[in-house]
Length: 126
Image (cartoon, rainbow, N blue to C red):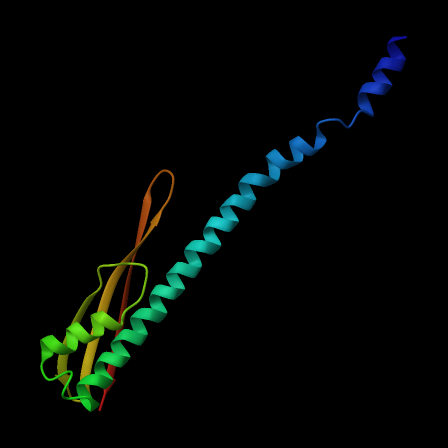
């Protein structure tokens, strides 16, 4: 009688899907959150690069809109569409033409700690 119960217990697969889910779910959630943060980081980089390029182009070509350093910085800040809301832009007349530089800190919020990645972009338009 005891031998029959032992065989039945070894071949019982009830609850195996719950155990598989418990093993796979944390890795899947970490992967999904990591991909989301990577997409936000790439979007921030792209938006920052576009804003400084358009700001430098505006200072060179659209002199009525970007007539001073402050108006060029304001224009570049208005073009930026990234998820981080506090970028810093600067303008300088350089040897290459009109140079606009932007910087921002992108923060990864983790359960235990935070990781801050400094991002910067520079564009020069003759």
